[in-house]
Length: 380
View 1: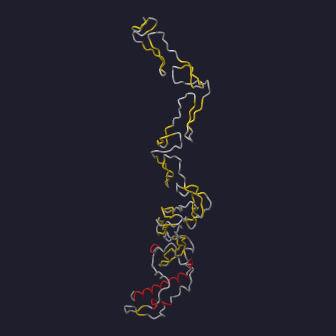
View 2: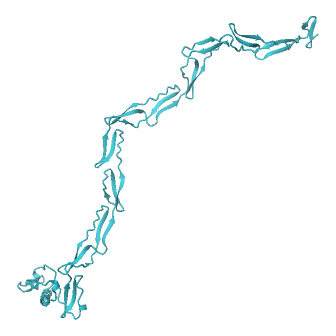
View 3: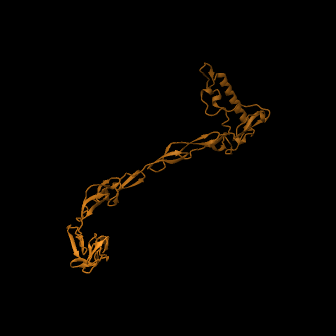
């Protein structure tokens, strides 16, 4: 700014102060609370300070050599009617008085609007300014970015930041403005002899003692917790079957595979034992003595056959249809001989033990009676 411009500003300020003193003296600006001390000429405008040269070599008013401590007062504006005066703001009404635009301040603390959505409780100040408190837009949500737009007010933007909601055994992430679990930490340490829980500091594992446990091995049984470990006994997979091969799988447990070939069924009264499927099968030893009047048995321990007589008079099977009414006697199974005589002298009558009676014709010429002989099966 050159020297002539600054000099013009000083003159304008002096004229404005003089005008305000005139108006205050007339009682026209009582609402402003006129203070004649503040309306005295600025010592920077009195010429008490010598002009100093500016950077261009010109002279600068002493008033401008010291920086202003407050806003410049508006220059006096001449007017004929109120519409010649510019808008004074939400806390200052301008009117045309004696050809000069004069401002009338609103009451201190009266409501106003500074046009900024980022302030609240706007009210007029003693200087005729409209001021409000800064709006705090923070919603306390870690999943939002909060800011204020001077036109629209508080604004919220969702973030995808990592957040914390109090569970130390999970990871959290912001989703649509809400802190949600992104992944859950499993506290299972795989040890059946610890109690696994989630505490304020994360996973915690408490050792258990003398409690039943399962070590996850199908080839062990009867697990008991001792000193934080599951102590078990081996599983016995022997099924007592000579026709299976017994093994244990740590995941599946006992397995029994079929075998083939010779075996022993533990019975001395069998022979030629062999595995058939998963069974040991042998041929039973025969103790039959051929006597229907004895009971025959084999001693499995000694493999000796025993024969015990059946009581006399007990019906028995003689093994022949040619014996009738057979019963047990001291001589064995005995009965009445079946008669097979067919009354024909020219036949020979016999009995087959299996099929019974049968007859065979005699040859021609065979004697069949006194002085008689068979001819063509007829006795003549």
